[in-house]
Length: 234
Ligand SMILES: C[S@@+](CC[C@H](N)C(=O)[O-])C[C@H]1O[C@@H](n2cnc3c(N)ncnc32)[C@H](O)[C@@H]1O
Image 1: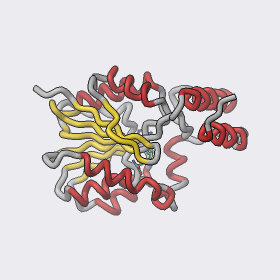
Image 2 (image 1 turned 180 degrees about the vertical axis):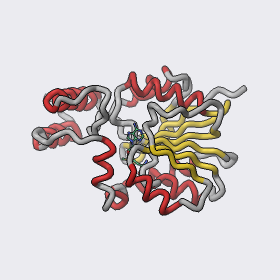
Image 3 (image 1 turned 30 degrees about the horizontal axis):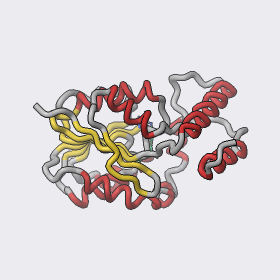
Image 4 (image 1 turned 90 degrees about the horizontal axis):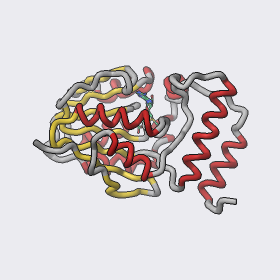
Protein backbone atom coordinates (compact mmCIF):
# COMPACT_ATOMS: atom_id res chain seq x y z
CA UNK A 1 0.00 0.00 0.00
CA UNK A 2 1.54 3.32 -1.12
CA UNK A 3 0.64 6.21 1.17
CA UNK A 4 0.84 9.22 -1.10
CA UNK A 5 -2.16 11.44 -1.89
CA UNK A 6 -1.10 12.24 -5.46
CA UNK A 7 -0.50 8.54 -6.19
CA UNK A 8 -3.86 7.46 -4.69
CA UNK A 9 -5.78 10.13 -6.62
CA UNK A 10 -4.02 9.27 -9.88
CA UNK A 11 -4.63 5.53 -9.36
CA UNK A 12 -8.33 6.16 -8.74
CA UNK A 13 -8.57 8.39 -11.85
CA UNK A 14 -6.83 5.76 -14.00
CA UNK A 15 -9.29 3.13 -12.71
CA UNK A 16 -12.25 5.42 -13.43
CA UNK A 17 -11.03 6.06 -17.00
CA UNK A 18 -9.71 2.51 -17.61
CA UNK A 19 -12.13 1.84 -20.51
CA UNK A 20 -11.42 5.06 -22.41
CA UNK A 21 -9.93 4.51 -25.85
CA UNK A 22 -6.48 5.90 -26.63
CA UNK A 23 -6.47 9.20 -28.56
CA UNK A 24 -3.80 10.28 -31.06
CA UNK A 25 -1.68 13.15 -29.75
CA UNK A 26 -2.44 15.75 -32.45
CA UNK A 27 -6.15 14.87 -32.57
CA UNK A 28 -6.38 15.09 -28.78
CA UNK A 29 -5.22 18.72 -28.77
CA UNK A 30 -7.14 19.61 -31.95
CA UNK A 31 -10.36 18.48 -30.22
CA UNK A 32 -9.64 20.47 -27.07
CA UNK A 33 -8.60 23.76 -28.59
CA UNK A 34 -11.65 25.59 -27.34
CA UNK A 35 -11.09 26.17 -23.64
CA UNK A 36 -7.44 25.04 -23.80
CA UNK A 37 -5.96 28.32 -22.57
CA UNK A 38 -8.47 28.56 -19.68
CA UNK A 39 -7.65 24.98 -18.74
CA UNK A 40 -3.95 25.92 -18.50
CA UNK A 41 -4.52 29.05 -16.39
CA UNK A 42 -3.21 27.39 -13.17
CA UNK A 43 0.24 27.44 -14.84
CA UNK A 44 0.34 31.22 -15.37
CA UNK A 45 3.15 31.65 -12.83
CA UNK A 46 5.19 28.94 -14.57
CA UNK A 47 4.96 30.72 -17.93
CA UNK A 48 6.05 33.98 -16.31
CA UNK A 49 9.06 32.30 -14.67
CA UNK A 50 10.15 30.54 -17.87
CA UNK A 51 10.13 33.93 -19.62
CA UNK A 52 12.08 35.54 -16.76
CA UNK A 53 14.76 32.83 -16.84
CA UNK A 54 15.71 33.56 -20.45
CA UNK A 55 18.93 35.58 -20.58
CA UNK A 56 18.36 39.18 -21.68
CA UNK A 57 20.89 38.63 -24.50
CA UNK A 58 18.68 35.96 -26.19
CA UNK A 59 18.03 36.72 -29.86
CA UNK A 60 16.97 33.33 -31.26
CA UNK A 61 14.64 30.88 -29.51
CA UNK A 62 13.35 27.39 -30.24
CA UNK A 63 10.04 26.36 -28.62
CA UNK A 64 9.29 22.61 -28.70
CA UNK A 65 5.60 21.73 -28.29
CA UNK A 66 4.60 25.39 -28.43
CA UNK A 67 0.83 24.75 -28.56
CA UNK A 68 -1.11 28.03 -28.68
CA UNK A 69 1.96 29.87 -27.37
CA UNK A 70 1.17 30.40 -23.69
CA UNK A 71 4.88 30.59 -22.83
CA UNK A 72 5.47 32.75 -25.92
CA UNK A 73 2.82 35.24 -24.73
CA UNK A 74 5.06 35.94 -21.71
CA UNK A 75 8.31 35.70 -23.60
CA UNK A 76 7.22 38.21 -26.28
CA UNK A 77 6.03 40.56 -23.51
CA UNK A 78 9.64 40.65 -22.28
CA UNK A 79 11.39 40.36 -25.65
CA UNK A 80 9.12 41.63 -28.43
CA UNK A 81 11.81 41.43 -31.13
CA UNK A 82 12.93 37.88 -30.43
CA UNK A 83 13.28 35.55 -33.45
CA UNK A 84 11.30 32.39 -32.59
CA UNK A 85 11.03 28.96 -34.22
CA UNK A 86 8.08 27.10 -32.73
CA UNK A 87 7.24 23.43 -33.42
CA UNK A 88 4.06 21.53 -32.73
CA UNK A 89 2.05 18.61 -34.15
CA UNK A 90 -1.36 20.15 -33.71
CA UNK A 91 -2.80 22.22 -36.52
CA UNK A 92 -5.42 24.01 -34.44
CA UNK A 93 -3.04 24.83 -31.59
CA UNK A 94 -0.51 26.38 -33.99
CA UNK A 95 -3.32 28.20 -35.86
CA UNK A 96 -4.20 29.93 -32.60
CA UNK A 97 -0.55 30.80 -32.01
CA UNK A 98 -0.33 32.39 -35.48
CA UNK A 99 -3.53 34.32 -34.80
CA UNK A 100 -1.97 35.82 -31.66
CA UNK A 101 1.61 36.33 -32.80
CA UNK A 102 1.65 36.07 -36.61
CA UNK A 103 3.00 39.60 -36.97
CA UNK A 104 6.14 38.80 -34.95
CA UNK A 105 9.44 37.28 -36.07
CA UNK A 106 7.93 33.82 -35.69
CA UNK A 107 8.41 30.67 -37.77
CA UNK A 108 5.79 28.04 -36.96
CA UNK A 109 6.59 24.46 -37.94
CA UNK A 110 3.78 21.91 -38.00
CA UNK A 111 5.81 18.77 -37.39
CA UNK A 112 7.04 16.16 -34.96
CA UNK A 113 9.99 17.44 -32.93
CA UNK A 114 11.48 13.94 -32.83
CA UNK A 115 11.69 13.86 -36.64
CA UNK A 116 12.20 17.48 -37.64
CA UNK A 117 15.82 18.51 -38.28
CA UNK A 118 16.56 21.20 -35.67
CA UNK A 119 19.95 21.95 -37.20
CA UNK A 120 23.20 22.84 -35.45
CA UNK A 121 24.39 25.87 -33.46
CA UNK A 122 21.31 27.87 -34.43
CA UNK A 123 19.60 29.02 -31.23
CA UNK A 124 20.62 31.05 -28.18
CA UNK A 125 17.93 29.32 -26.16
CA UNK A 126 15.28 26.60 -26.28
CA UNK A 127 12.19 26.05 -24.14
CA UNK A 128 9.64 23.32 -23.73
CA UNK A 129 6.60 23.61 -21.48
CA UNK A 130 4.21 20.77 -20.60
CA UNK A 131 5.00 18.73 -23.69
CA UNK A 132 7.65 16.05 -23.06
CA UNK A 133 5.81 14.12 -20.34
CA UNK A 134 4.36 11.68 -22.87
CA UNK A 135 7.58 9.94 -23.85
CA UNK A 136 10.10 7.41 -22.57
CA UNK A 137 13.51 8.32 -21.15
CA UNK A 138 15.22 6.69 -24.16
CA UNK A 139 13.21 8.71 -26.67
CA UNK A 140 13.79 11.90 -24.73
CA UNK A 141 17.55 11.33 -24.48
CA UNK A 142 17.69 11.36 -28.31
CA UNK A 143 15.61 14.55 -28.42
CA UNK A 144 17.78 16.25 -25.79
CA UNK A 145 20.84 15.41 -27.93
CA UNK A 146 19.12 17.15 -30.89
CA UNK A 147 18.31 20.20 -28.75
CA UNK A 148 21.90 20.25 -27.49
CA UNK A 149 23.20 20.25 -31.07
CA UNK A 150 20.72 22.93 -32.14
CA UNK A 151 21.87 25.34 -29.41
CA UNK A 152 24.82 27.66 -29.86
CA UNK A 153 27.75 27.10 -27.47
CA UNK A 154 26.75 28.55 -24.09
CA UNK A 155 23.05 28.26 -25.10
CA UNK A 156 20.40 27.50 -22.52
CA UNK A 157 17.51 24.99 -22.45
CA UNK A 158 14.62 25.63 -20.06
CA UNK A 159 12.02 22.95 -19.37
CA UNK A 160 8.90 23.18 -17.27
CA UNK A 161 6.95 19.93 -17.22
CA UNK A 162 4.94 17.39 -15.29
CA UNK A 163 7.30 15.21 -13.26
CA UNK A 164 6.48 12.08 -11.24
CA UNK A 165 6.90 13.07 -7.59
CA UNK A 166 7.60 9.43 -6.60
CA UNK A 167 8.94 6.49 -8.68
CA UNK A 168 5.66 4.61 -8.23
CA UNK A 169 3.84 7.29 -10.30
CA UNK A 170 6.28 6.76 -13.18
CA UNK A 171 5.85 2.96 -12.91
CA UNK A 172 2.05 3.16 -12.67
CA UNK A 173 1.57 5.49 -15.65
CA UNK A 174 3.96 3.61 -17.96
CA UNK A 175 2.31 0.30 -17.02
CA UNK A 176 -1.18 1.67 -17.67
CA UNK A 177 -0.09 3.30 -20.92
CA UNK A 178 1.30 -0.06 -22.11
CA UNK A 179 -1.93 -1.84 -21.15
CA UNK A 180 -4.10 0.65 -23.06
CA UNK A 181 -1.84 0.61 -26.13
CA UNK A 182 -1.89 -3.20 -26.27
CA UNK A 183 -5.65 -3.29 -25.74
CA UNK A 184 -6.24 -0.79 -28.60
CA UNK A 185 -3.55 -2.32 -30.87
CA UNK A 186 -1.49 0.88 -31.05
CA UNK A 187 2.13 0.46 -32.16
CA UNK A 188 4.95 2.03 -30.11
CA UNK A 189 5.80 4.55 -32.82
CA UNK A 190 2.31 6.15 -32.83
CA UNK A 191 1.91 9.01 -30.36
CA UNK A 192 -1.08 8.94 -28.06
CA UNK A 193 -2.06 11.46 -25.45
CA UNK A 194 -1.39 9.69 -22.18
CA UNK A 195 0.72 11.25 -19.43
CA UNK A 196 3.80 9.21 -18.54
CA UNK A 197 5.94 11.53 -16.40
CA UNK A 198 9.47 10.56 -15.42
CA UNK A 199 10.86 11.22 -11.95
CA UNK A 200 13.11 14.28 -11.71
CA UNK A 201 16.11 11.96 -11.38
CA UNK A 202 15.22 10.13 -14.61
CA UNK A 203 14.42 13.37 -16.47
CA UNK A 204 17.78 14.88 -15.50
CA UNK A 205 19.55 11.67 -16.37
CA UNK A 206 17.95 11.68 -19.88
CA UNK A 207 19.12 15.29 -20.32
CA UNK A 208 22.64 14.37 -19.26
CA UNK A 209 22.63 11.43 -21.70
CA UNK A 210 21.73 13.96 -24.40
CA UNK A 211 24.84 16.03 -23.55
CA UNK A 212 23.53 18.52 -20.98
CA UNK A 213 25.90 17.43 -18.22
CA UNK A 214 24.95 20.29 -15.91
CA UNK A 215 21.16 20.05 -16.12
CA UNK A 216 19.67 21.11 -12.79
CA UNK A 217 16.41 21.88 -11.07
CA UNK A 218 16.24 25.63 -10.47
CA UNK A 219 12.86 25.89 -8.81
CA UNK A 220 9.55 24.19 -8.25
CA UNK A 221 6.21 25.98 -8.42
CA UNK A 222 3.28 24.06 -6.90
CA UNK A 223 5.20 20.83 -7.43
CA UNK A 224 6.05 21.46 -11.10
CA UNK A 225 9.80 21.77 -11.64
CA UNK A 226 11.64 24.19 -13.87
CA UNK A 227 14.90 22.69 -15.13
CA UNK A 228 17.71 24.66 -16.70
CA UNK A 229 20.43 23.03 -18.80
CA UNK A 230 23.31 24.68 -20.62
CA UNK A 231 25.38 23.76 -23.61
CA UNK A 232 29.10 24.00 -22.92
CA UNK A 233 30.65 27.24 -24.18
CA UNK A 234 33.58 27.47 -26.58
C1 LIG B 1 -0.08 20.47 -23.05
S1 LIG B 1 0.36 21.16 -24.61
C2 LIG B 1 1.52 22.43 -24.11
C3 LIG B 1 1.54 23.56 -25.12
C4 LIG B 1 2.28 24.80 -24.64
N1 LIG B 1 3.70 24.55 -24.51
C5 LIG B 1 1.66 25.26 -23.34
O1 LIG B 1 2.31 25.11 -22.28
O2 LIG B 1 0.51 25.70 -23.39
C6 LIG B 1 1.47 19.94 -25.34
C7 LIG B 1 1.78 20.27 -26.80
O3 LIG B 1 2.84 19.40 -27.24
C8 LIG B 1 2.56 19.04 -28.58
N2 LIG B 1 3.29 17.81 -28.91
C9 LIG B 1 3.23 16.61 -28.29
N3 LIG B 1 4.06 15.74 -28.87
C10 LIG B 1 4.66 16.39 -29.89
C11 LIG B 1 5.64 16.01 -30.86
N4 LIG B 1 6.15 14.77 -30.93
N5 LIG B 1 6.07 16.94 -31.76
C12 LIG B 1 5.55 18.22 -31.72
N6 LIG B 1 4.63 18.63 -30.81
C13 LIG B 1 4.19 17.72 -29.91
C14 LIG B 1 1.04 18.86 -28.61
O4 LIG B 1 0.51 18.92 -29.93
C15 LIG B 1 0.58 20.03 -27.72
O5 LIG B 1 0.30 21.20 -28.45
